[in-house]
Length: 467
Image (cartoon, rainbow, N blue to C red; front, side, top):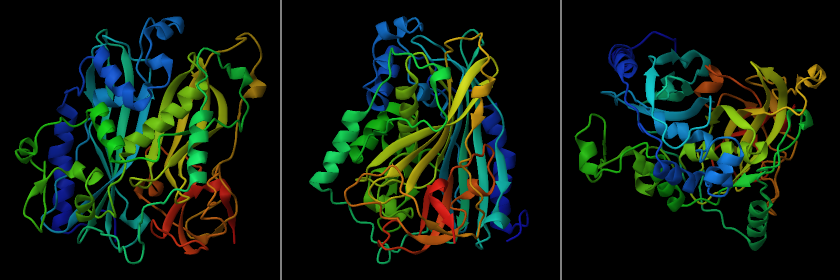
């Protein structure tokens, strides 16, 4: 399918984005959360990180030099969240695949901060030729937005990344071929989960200095799982991206609801996170976690490690596949780069969430953290460096999963020894506005364990060998 050569339905989608959605987005100065009240920060922190005193105790914020209570870094998402979607086409089904975000955090948000925003237009990139499966694919970058405080200083910046696929109908999975059943947890697996939770380390007031960090250093894992519908309801309330209005309010908005073809009743699209029937009507085996919940788990991985004195500066993350309710993800990471960024000394952390029940990655990220110096006068150039986490792999390569990741479920790593072909899992591996490596998609053709998530999985690149 050739990029830019459109039929009538496809052209209508492109025109809508370019002529209506993009100008409206750029002109919109609405702030989702205009003031960082104590209650707003508390409500967000109660789900995202109720364990770290830095985000719960004003005194810890003062001792760390912030003047009082500060919000977790990804609170910025609550301030400026403004995702827009093209309308449903007159023919077919436009699949929206939330691919992740790019965030920059300039300074911690404090109680009383007041916000304004400046937005740029959207970017729509045709990726059909790169993916080449007979469907029309676009990469859609929207909410290109900078947030400023009441003094005109920039607080942060974000960009939302979405994959769009025009299908004849929703891509409802064949559950007879891939029966996505609940994982049945053993006592030994619960022991592992509980030991991971007890082993989480919040660095806190013990300063982590840039000089002390080693390339390849691993971060202590974190988890919020196994997740349930309660976790997602609580997260939705904490983020407050969508007002908790009755459904009738959404019926008054263009594209605010979808219609159940069986019952002719309407439902808010977010219901696919909570209700099995709604999830299947929209092409999913069962309800699944919000991608943003995984993003916050990755940020917590970094803030636990960085100490009160370190600051997360960039989160570049991808929501590569969905985590269904009942699964347990563990966040892992390691330092892959040490360098100077402006006047700050920074490290890049390659982080990911590993689905312990299925063996694949669900979220991946490159996280930049600025750390204090022990001796700013010393010659530190010898400490600069980076690790190769990309590997020499290309689409179409035959590979075997030969390594074992950070994995301790007694049932073992289900993808060990699996073979397959590298292929693009989603649009942002074909063309990415904020690229990074470290993970690879594989179409599995040989596996000792029956797959329960489909035949395409995402794994850390370092686990692979070419056949």
